[in-house]
Length: 476
Image (cartoon, rainbow, N blue to C red; front, side):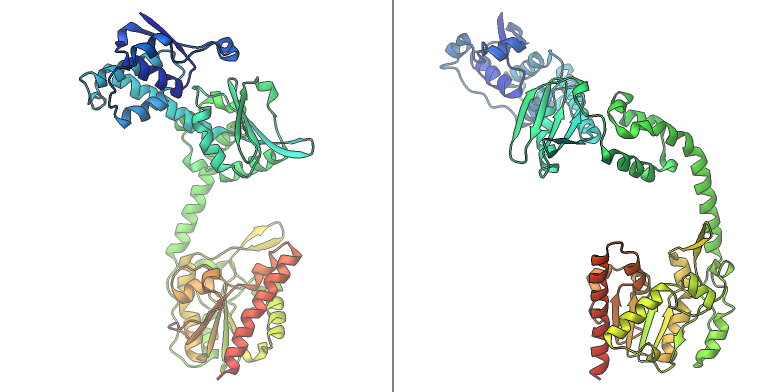
């Protein structure tokens, strides 16, 4: 019987197993054991025993399937001390008459290998899913530290994933057995530490908890599946674990509220249909007809229809999304903060608003109550579709030379497909409704920009888009 002591790693097992195989040591004549920490620390370990090396000098070499080597590399990370003898037994069988052994799934040895491989891969996945870095300031330098307790020896196997994912950070992953450190250039390993040496929280953790609570979908909660994918043994290391019980308690009531809202919305949308627009060339007749429009449910909560405004022979038409709070009360488009910003931009671009026509894709204000305020809500496709005949009729009467779509909703309804503003901005396109159609941002998007410098830059871009319109109009 031969006793082989080795460093617990795939590379070490591979070297020793190859020599033992060349020495023709049958699997049942070899005992395998992991080296102790003291042997590794004192350098007392010889991974290629002299007896193996001498016997293997003139021994034949064997061809081993790549599938086995890949599996062995993963199984070598398993915590079971039995893994080395199992791997060598399967290796011996493959090289001594059973070359296609891995294809025999019902073989007990093959089945055990697959089970161990699956367990290691699952642990790898859990580590990637549940490692949480916390910010630590050490000697004025920002570092990120995480604590994890793997089931198997997977730290080195997982290292490339974390290095690639967080290459620009300096971080450490601490485990009870080994610790991995990345300084932005190279990875190093140190002995394991106890859990109390890991940080317990940082300023970013509260933001993460807010985000997690926000994305938590009560309608998709399956407690058994959650526990299967996120076993409770990981919970103590996860910041979000503290709020999961509360979120689960609230799940059922939240689902009921969501269902009620969904049914109400579906009921409302069933009422939506394309508006019945009169066949007329008179803009005032069109305006009067729109005042009583009930093509979609938005009229129920709006103060009034907000129709377009401007000269009937205008050469430029601006199409926005929908009226806002002040427009709803005044009955005129673009008279609130966004309208005043549009006026300023038009003035800087050299365009007189009095010579233009301004309107919206949706003629009623869609809103929700928050305290005493009425907050804007984006119209859904059914509501936009119901209102489409109105702005089409406006364009048919005015026949503008240039149509400017302000924002994504206006662009989508005109181009009849979803678009990213940045992809089509600043380019004149020919559409069914106008020979020259330009897409730009809605002025309300500038008002939502909190950074003054960025807001000024975006305002300059908006004015530049309008100057394109002014130049196009002047080049007739």
